[in-house]
Image (cartoon, rainbow over all chains, first blue to last red; front, side):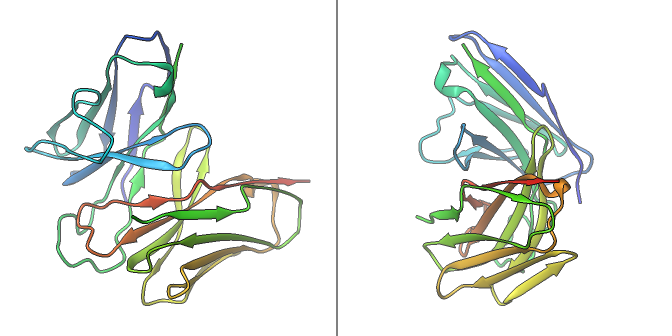
Length: 122
Length: 114
């Protein structure tokens, strides 16, 4: 298992500003993920962050809007840039300690999630 | 593209009732399916994980079944308690996905009142 913390837990921001969210894991993991949960919607993967390489973004998400850093195996940041009210969401990071990056999965791989950062943009 | 649907969106029941939450997915080529519980400010907690080769998993009062061919899963909660109040999310992992991507439903918001 893995214990994940996020900072801040919540924030209220003005449009046009940027917010950086931190994700800290209590163990070394290869892959970390950032999700967004808009009000009333399902969790949507923003990007996958591997240590030592550029993050991989999902369709609809771009690096200029959501730059990600992954300086080591226990830490990552997600920045929400030039915010608008549509960015109001819960942002969650997750990790997958076992089997990440393997071609053949066992089927038992699971992800552990942080508590989330609740963002409101005015 | 995998799409996951959960029914009902919300459920409010008195304590003690047995409940069934439903999840359906469009692409049956999955590695596994997970049920999560989401509490405000606490993130997601994994409840049960069913591998594609399995039919069901049980943990305490929870039982999850999987019918991969029909693209359906159900989460059965026995003798519900107020502490079960939370949002329950279903998520699937597609075959061929090495990047750990999970596809989530919108969840079922459950309220159990004393």
